[in-house]
Amino acid sequence: MDGGSPGSEVAFSDELYEQLRGLAAQMFRREDAGHTLQPTAVVHEAYLRLADRMPEEWNDRSHFFAASARAMRRVLIDAARRRGSEKRGGGAERVTLHEGAAEEEPTLHVGVAELDEALEKLAKHSERYVEIVELRFFGGLSVEEVAHVLGISDRMVRLEWAKARSWLSLYLEDPQF
Image 1 (cartoon, rainbow, N blue to C red):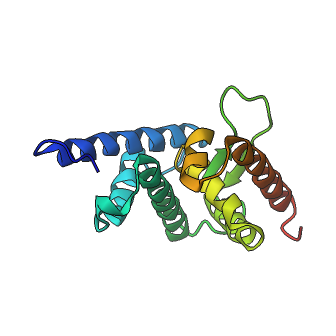
Image 2: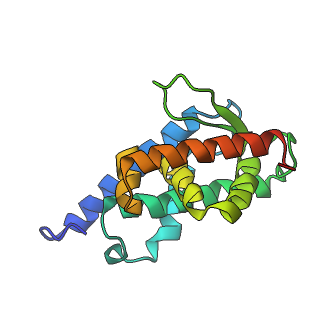
């Protein structure tokens, strides 16, 4: 992706790794205390899952972070399932899905396995809503970066992010919704 001097691919990979680790650390700050995974472990596992893919497969950094977001989601879900926490409230790790620290809107406080189940249901209504949630929550991408990755306007991302969060909130309150 860099195409620079010899060794630039290694530096680029190191830089990407540090950015992924920062995103994972940010994601873990939104969780309850008591979670068992560490940001470094999540990034290592996600990085290994992505390692077999050549950098040329990614159009740009945003595309790489989109793939990384999906990989981190899978790592978290796999870990939650290994711990047997897919039952609602059964000691599951809780995460908070919110717009950002500066926003005053309510947050969704949900278990990782519950969020995965809800995203699977949401995918039946809108794959793009799921992509936006993955990119914003798991990938830490900004509205502008999500718009770039998906090829839509910033306004559309904001609108669909709000709709996805509303749908998730309703579903998590009543799974029969």
